[in-house]
Each structure stands twice: as structure tokens, then as C-alpha cells.
Image (cartoon, rainbow, N blue to C red; front, side, top):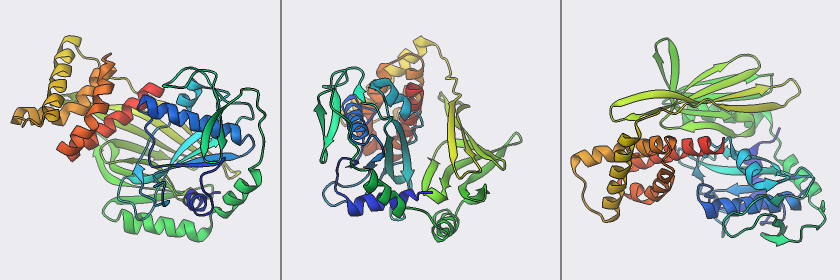
Length: 378
């Protein structure tokens, strides 16, 4: 069992960017250019490593390897994105790795790429890359190559050694449980469960009961053995259930217009642990978005756009406009879910404006964009 925090440290300590490893300050797959560059690197790393894992570490300064972290990135549908744009797509996972010195909500992203042994190519045009292009790694650079180039296995032994040095042990597991419960989440209700005598899942949050159902907010869930953060949200509520073989969460999102708010189930995630020391994670998007009158939404959409224009021009908002601004991320999301495609671009444009204007609204916007990503990639 690999401790992913140790794996990140070993990658950073012993290797410059190369044909099996890349590092990024951040990735922006919500934008066309960022998505294209991410797919290019995935394609190049898969083709350069046909028989071993390759990695992208996200949240690291390029010049000095300093770990600065990125926001928790909950995107269980990232495989769907890769499948949509690449032929012979590799298996890919994005894991959120906590580091003690990072502030709450910040993690290091670890993208693991496993080739299927065939040449991976770009399926269709995106940004300035054309369908049919093939990418390989030359040192630390992802470069286009001729399609009929052979796949060569040159990194298997090196990667195997790095992964071996990142193996977990009992001391690291115990330290992880104690740190999670006693230090990082001493102000929340915390718990843990051991599965199959090998896996330890810890979770923490504020617990409340509504109509006989127990919900958790401010939730943090980690698979301690691998130092992987499975779920984190400062806003959304979830339910938790488990038995001897599996751990299940259902995430709920609060949506509505004005004071009329309602909880909607968004995604069900089941982690199933096997007797042979392996586990699988399956996710099922169970979201049924609320439907509203298009004429009313058109008015709200235009009002939101006008608010952003005022922020852009640094015009002071009236008290009722400040209240509308508080609901802007949710109402933009509702507009998008009801067919207003332009709402996504407006949400992306609002990032910088809201970050300067109101930190709480900015956090709500990031949550809304996370939900939007899940719905789009499904």
C-alpha cells in the first residue's frame, strides 16, 4: 500500500521533471486552454510510459519545488474527460494529498496515469491542438511526434523503486489517525473505522439530525493509509454509512431562488474494500436539477450580469444588490442547469471579481463550479 504523501515527496526530492513525472503550480481544466494543455500532458506521459505509472504533481512551485498547495479538487469524472478527448485513453485518477503545513482546504493534487499499452492520440480538435496529434515526453517537455513512433519502456525500474520507497507502515498510519482526530479536527466530531484489518478511514464534521437522518457539514474524510483526502467541503452536507466491507457517502447541495432553498442529492460514492488488500471507488451522479420558469431565469441571469459589470467598474452596490450578490453563484448554476450555457463563462469571469469583493461568496462560487464540472463530465 503506497503512502501518497511519501510518493509526492520522493518525486519532488529525487527527480526533476522528466518522461514519467511533471509538476504544475495549478491546472485549469475548466478553461479551454487549460483543458487542452492538461490533455496534452496526459497523452504525452501515457505514451512515454507504456508499462508503468506516470504522474503530475499539482500545487508545487516550478523554480524551487516549494509545496504551496491548491484547492481540494473533487472531480470523480476526470476519466470521462480523458475518454472524451483521447483515443486509447489511459486510466487516470486525481487524488488530493494533505500536507501538515498547508492551510485548511489546501492540498497537493496527484494525477496518476496508467497507459493501456497502445499509442494514445488526441481524438478531436481542442484549442490549438488538432485531432489525431500524438504527444511524447522529451525530458520535461510534452512534444508532438509522428503517429507511427514505437512505445518504449525505459522507466519501469525507476518508477518501481520510487513507489517501493513510498510504502506505508504501522507508525505512519497511527500517526495519521492521531493527527487527524487530535490536532487537525479537535473542534469537530471525529471518528474512524478499520476495514479488512488493513484500511483506516477517518472522518470529521459537524453532526446534525433532520427528520431522523444524520447529516454532516464541514466534512473531511481521509483514507489514512494512503494519505488521500476523499472528500472535503466547507459548505455542502453529506450522509455517511458503512458496514464491514464498504464506506458510503451521499453528498447533498442546497439550491434555490432567494429564500426558497432545498437540498438535492448530488452524488453517491461507495468505497468497497476487498480481502486481498485492494479497494475500489465507484461514484454515481444522482442529481436531478431543479427546473424553473425560463422567463424568470432570464431576468435573474441579466441581473447577475449587471452586478458583475458594477464590480468590474468598481461601482458601490446597494444593500439589495449585496444580497443578490450573495446568491449569485447559486443562481448562475441554476441558470446553467436550465439551459443557459453562457452562465458557465460568467461564473469563470466572476472568479477574480468575487475574490476581491467577498471571500464567502467566492467560496460559494468555487463550490458551484465544482458541481457544474461533475454534471458536465458525467
